Image 1 (cartoon, rainbow over the protein chains, first blue to last red):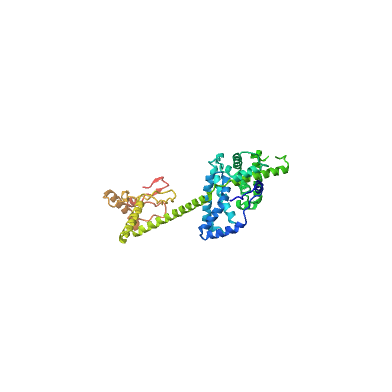
Image 2: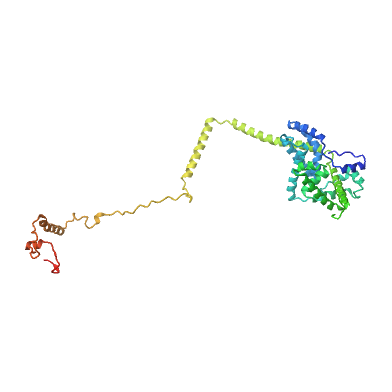
Length: 216
Length: 188
């Protein structure tokens, strides 16, 4: 997912206030690519992989907090999508369909991993602290964020996320990080919009407790 | 948090959302997508090769079997031999003592009345005719001679009155003993 290039810190803050929704214009493009892929055009499927890898990476990584697991899971997700692409009837958008596959596979993976794996804070992403976009937004956002070490902030955010239950973490990832709307999330998870809102509310309350010193 | 002003709570919620949105910058390093795609293609090829190698193995195995230069009559003989062997084995298994299970119904035993085989020759009167017993023969003959005159009507009829009941000497001997209740003993 290519983030919009921000020319000014204010613009960056403004962009953070609005969730990014799945662009409707790409739905038609997806439909064409899917039809070509269903007809056996492997290049069309490659285009779909190129388009959705960054988006799904953000989703899976924020749910697992591990880069290697994320890469492996994404391989499995696209392999499954490739095998099932001919059965995709187009009742929902490809966007919703591939997100559903990714969420379900990640939740299954987390259930299996949860039996023997404890996430340590060493698993957090160490590359983001050098991300110029991230630095610019965090340093510009002086109204809400205290001046903290960026690496420390990232660690705290990841730690707070990992304290949430899998269902709450999924909703926060889809809504806050991925920028999807309630309706889209309800379709992906197969639950009602009310459930999505409820989970989001409780997740935010928990995060507020975990990140108290950052938000006050 | 419960005593908070709703507006403050809302702004805290917004702050949380802003904080969490920072995580969208956690993106894979540059070139990840192309590298990922290459790996994806490699996996797809491996999967295809795995499938095709299995198909190739099967094809080769069937070809080898078809090209095996075995004469038809040898094959038929071998098949027949195998059949015979199996029949023999099964029949051998059947000849082994069978273990009866309790599930099978117990056969009823019909009890016939016991009839002992009697040797009639051992009876005392069985071989009476064969015995050369002179005494017995004579006694039987004497009895016969005593009874015979009465049967032929040579015995004098009895008198009508009871006073004239006197038998002749000869007839007295031959007349059967009669019980005389008045004298209280056997009449002679």
